[in-house]
Length: 97
Length: 476
Image (cartoon, rainbow over all chains, first blue to last red; front, top):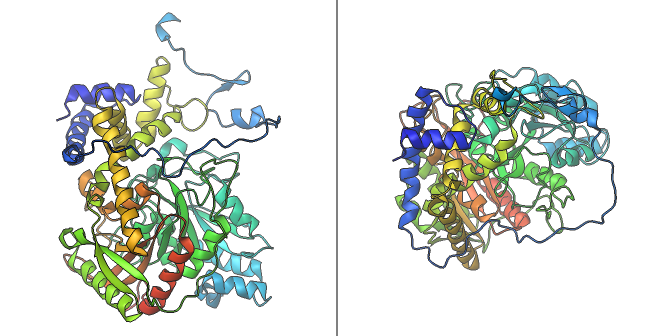
């Protein structure tokens, strides 16, 4: 039901790199789960409101007062590659370097 | 020392309040016990950390490794957070600390709470103290195993589709998922935000009430938290006179292990002996709970887990190329198979062309499931089912078949989809299919939203009527 190309497409959307073996296995496993899930396709759900959340959500407001936020160091301390007070990452376009 | 370990948390807390037990002595006794962990149940253990004041003074709590704890490692069972130490503490743990409790250790779990066997942990599976060749359930498998195995007096976990109740059932202890919104989710690493809820895993119902009372409440840091109006009192109800219990009519056809069905039916008789009434009620959409859950939860997870990208915290694998390559390499090495499977499933269900067929329909099924419960609660006080279709299964038995693994959640997913509270209490022992020593069976009671006090009172009365006192390693 889900083929190799679809698995690769979804993996790209999800920023997951899969090995060839993963792709084959994932195609089979996802197809199996979706075959079960497809049973909800048989239910008559016309006019049923979708539930996004179980508690009635309303805006929760607080006074707009300035508060201190986390110290920069505490955040950068946990980063894999902090540099110059920022998070350093590889270039989005490695070829252009 | 060992007599201290025999006490329930409520008993110990009373002894501490009376001055009969020194809080630091109690905490230390449990620290020594926790150090003997041979179930792979702890990922980290505390050197100290007892609070001296409050209703839970000196009480050690084992905390699922999904709760952020300042200065203590927090991995969510994932390689991608292997060395992560959060800068802040989750509200649930903060409330326990403010009541005087201390963190005894962080417990092993299925990676990002995705699993029903604890076999998806990057740090190896937890063993079931009743039979080390079997799973403790999941995803809060470590929290269930430490309480059942005498390595902690109580624990907390999270339940998205059954992750507190199912391991509690498989380990022979009490596990409760409160109403969505009862306890703040702040600092609880997100899996599926519209379903995730924190709750206690304890030896008995009274201890569950004690922990729930300490943790519930509205929190400005989680705008979906509302707390439980009037708080939570320790249960004291005797008997079940006039209490109306409903069994789903569809249960007769559901796939349930024979031993589990026998214990379930015996428990219904116990309810009647205590004065309760048993009826049948149709819950026609509950059987579609697994389908709806395995669309909605992975969809939310695929979004929540986008944050693990190797930029701000956690693991990074450079990949030797551009930014996208770094993302993909980090996530390929950092996530385990089940997490990847769910991210893929969720991304697919949300992708263009499939959204309405999967996510849209699943949300409508969710409405139908909630409506079934509403109709049931218009006539009855509680809905009851077995917690799990089987007793603890063997390690490795279901790892090759994701769908078979997902079916473990059959009886536990409808409640979080409807947002309602449910508790699992040990009801007896049953021989597993294929033979072997008898293992615990959980009985699940579900109640309307925010009816926690009524639920705890009824569960307490039933607990007294059942009188479950079997222990792992005991000769039954």
